[in-house]
Length: 235
Image 1 (cartoon, rainbow, N blue to C red):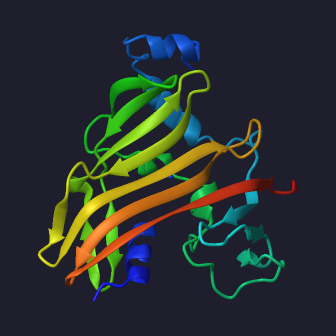
Image 2: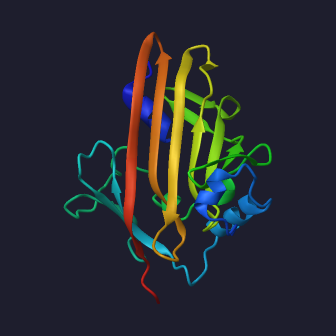
């Protein structure tokens, strides 16, 4: 039987100089290479940008409590609790490997079965449609790839050539197997520089899933926030 924790695991299984107001008021698409330039900028790991060695995480269930992920050259990467203690196990709902948030691989996060296609301007951002290559779903003894059942969108700020967010959603209800129906599915990831001039990092993740399995219905959702990114010490 698929349980709520299992579904939560399933859900958790990242230089166009046009003023924002003008872009939003125009139907003209951005320059053809905007997406490619944003992809290149997202993967930039220059010495000037620096590297990230820690950040704060606030899961949606934590009621204001925060956890820290620290990368120590000698001890390795570890999660720390609200009181600063080293945790033997990662907090529920947070990534097992925090490096996925601070060292995102843009070619994988924004991978598309078809060339990304500009679809509209929204709030000054250029919105592109994606066809995700791989969207794994697992939990409760089930394991699926639902890439063919979902569509993605990526938003780019044309002034900074930076990705702002990516969403993946199911346009309609579907069955990944005869035993499971996904009635609603949407995930979102937000991005921003770790600090001014710093590398692109994940600043928030969210999910909303309504599913039924074994004659039970599960309506789950949550949002994790990340911040206070710390650069690695030089040397």
